[in-house]
Length: 324
Ligand code: SF4
Ligand code: SF4
Image (cartoon, rainbow, N blue to C red):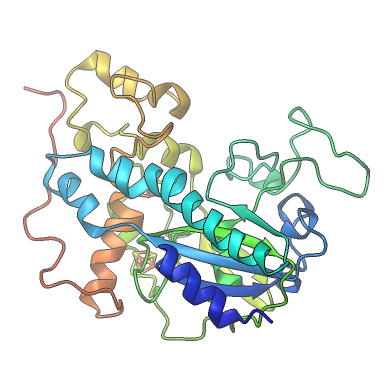
């Protein structure tokens, strides 16, 4: 009989950095369009894995000198290369033991959930122009799994004010993947360790798009726990994380570039510097929700993944506009 500990150790040996297990009944109350129990109604367990964003991938953006490492090795490469490799191996291990398993890296281009938050009243609902439910009792394909809630359900940590998932090992510095399986594995308890997010609002202060409010929040209940995070402006985040700010994008050298980088995200992502691994174009280096938060949590000694030197070693740079 397969044991939870065996699966977790195997996932770690394959390349995951943190692993937790949640039971599917913890999804009770999720919007139908976001409920993974519709993907595999006989599944009992969700295995959630976190993959570290190496701190050094952010170094070049912190210094203003090297950007592609974060966009590729710290972002899209984790979601498009590392996670699928590990998901395949762990899925094979489970299926070799006779348990059907659905591998799901952090990649939802076909989702039919209105999940971005640009229409808060519609969030979690079906977009009727995109696809149809195959029967009235089912959501339309593709169901969207909220990976941060999945990680909470699997006991890996908490969701911070920035809406980033925070783990005690890496803080906001991981990307998440899941496997849904009919293996009846012992679930981990919901995280009950020291509180990580202290509502310091460093994330909001350093967000170049002012996309993280300090006074507006979203509250939901998951597995009997009330969760709250800032009511992020996703439209602004989607533009600014790709470099819409004149002060924080050294690739924006003139007014033509300003127009190009400030287009809506789909168009901006193709402007001047192409994405890596299909979509990685995070030119802003998650200034608030990852870097500022990580610095704060490291300073407080809250993270297990420690370093010999602090992350911020020099005065942060900021460019003038117009240039020259
Ligand atoms: S920066 Fe502060 S308020 Fe924002 S998520 Fe991190 S700990 Fe919470
Ligand atoms: S990715 Fe950048 S723009 Fe988006 S919330 Fe984080 S700091 Fe703000």
